[in-house]
Length: 84
Image: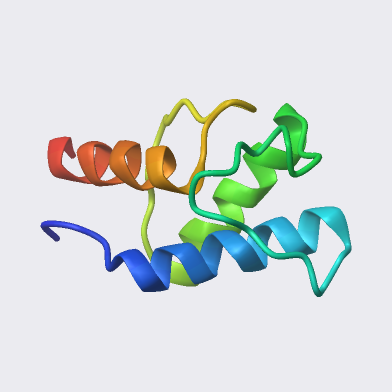
């Protein structure tokens, strides 16, 4: 796999954030940090697992923090998949 589809990825992230926040109508802006969305490190780890499951991929060890955004997560995910 060369790279993830940005739209599918963004939707998977949005769904993962909504599940962690238990807020089905929350909107996730691509440049908004996960911390600003109210996610802590455990929530982010669970959101990453949700994204992996939704997209059928495994990022392995990937460092996503509270200051990351959907955009930076996508960049890190694509780099991780390219190096696997």
